[in-house]
Amino acid sequence: MSALKVDRLRLQLPPWPDEGEADPVDAEVHCGWRAADGRWHDGGALALGAVAGCFEARHLEVALAPGEVALASFALPPLTARHLHAAVLGAIEPCALQPIDALAVGIGPRGADGTVPTAWIARDTMARWLTLLRRHGIAPRALCVPTAFLPTPTQGWTGLQLDRWLVVRTGAGAGFMQALPHGADRDAALAAYVTSGEAASPVVHWTEQEEGDAARWSGEGWRWALSASDPAQAHAGVAALLRPAALWGCMAALVWTAGLQVHAHRLATQGQALKREMAARVKAAFPELPVVVNPVQQARQQKEARAGQAPQAAVGGDYAALSRAAVGLLAQLPAGQVQALHYTAGELRIRWREGAAPNTEALRVLQAQAHERSLSADPEAGALRVTPATARAEKDTP
Image 1 (cartoon, one colour):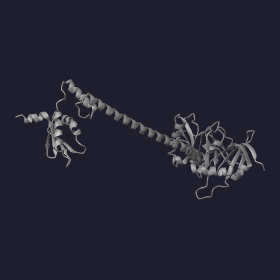
Image 2 (cartoon, helix red, strand yellow):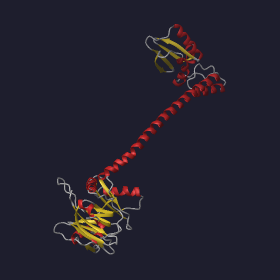
Image 3 (cartoon, one colour):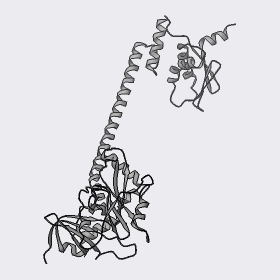
Image 4 (cartoon, helix red, strand yellow):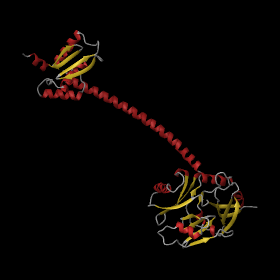
């Protein structure tokens, strides 16, 4: 028997079995189809494995069971697509029973009342259904909510009872699903859904789940669904796209770091060269300076001294003036010879390291250099006492 060619085929899936039960390999699905002339037909119940052999459809739509997919509407302001997706995820989080990253989410267009219809389902449940459908030759592009198949209401709402669930379509792309407790009627279940602020729910036009009744399949204008792309494949695809980008990013970071290090080394070299050039210029301008440690400061001091018509400013007895005057003297000492410096009451004591005190000749040279700098250098046990020459002269004056 050849497959029936149809314009559109719609399948209503049953709930996935509970944990511990066998997979629904031969699950029974209800189906409806639209012929080329636009009329809808009810196809009754078929084994999932027989669907591909019975129909050859130009368009295929598959709806999930009401108990597996959640459907809600959230009032949100006008947002860009990226911000809308983030806002919807934030609205779903307190309602969902699983972490957001474990859900597959479908988002509908924002309505005139500012509400955004949204559906979500556990990714693993959706992945199991997609695997089973593809195993039987059924490859939908999206999985719908059951409300999508109901007729669009012109007035009031359109509803259908699927097992113990009420499926209600309230507009072109909006609706809700309400569980029907045992022993409760439809009106009581609807009253539990309607908010307390509404006087009464709109009139619901019920379509019956009876074989041969095609009205339940004839809905049009529902423009959104849950994407049927395999979440695992989607994550793998994203990872495959990100892998070379991450590699190139790491290479770019390495090149940038190497370039930064080269630039820093170049700047350091230029800084050292500039410092040496400045020291050479200060030394040439002021040859009386024995050593140039701080070119800018020493040049300023020499300039101020010459402006005051003095060859060198008198050395004061405070620590700053005495230490500045002793810089040239300390620069003449070998590295590691000085252990510590102590300043008390206008006297700077240079304490030698053990066994590193200068000999008589070296001490005489130091005293001569100190005298050139208006300093007095007097040897002590293991140290050299440095004072301004004016202070020494005052002490020596009777």
